[in-house]
Image 1 (cartoon, one colour):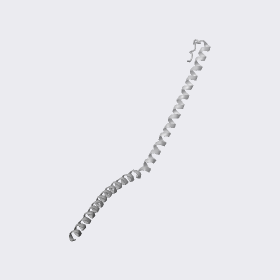
Image 2: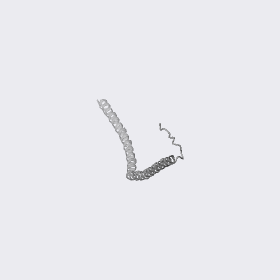
Image 3: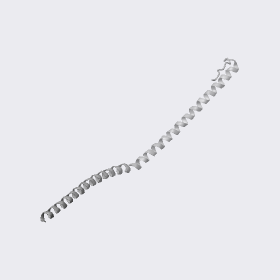
Image 4: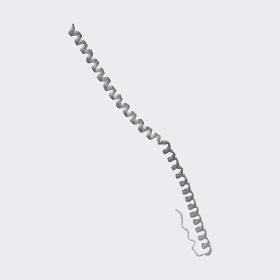
Length: 111
């Protein structure tokens, strides 16, 4: 009878030892996960802490690019107007000289 009680207690002790070992493993895994989450949170906080300043700088850069683009668009429009005036002056010049007979009246056909 004593041997049966000793075997039973040993069996219970082994089962409890297994449970303790599994709980210890679980604790190690949870500690690892907690450390990783803490590291991720730190990196995220660092990135998001600078986000408003980065967004403001990006908006400022976009505004500056739009201002430069508007200035360039105005210059392009002025160049187009100058080219248009030069072409008009050329046409008037050619018509004037054709009327005077200084240039032959031959015309090129547009395709």
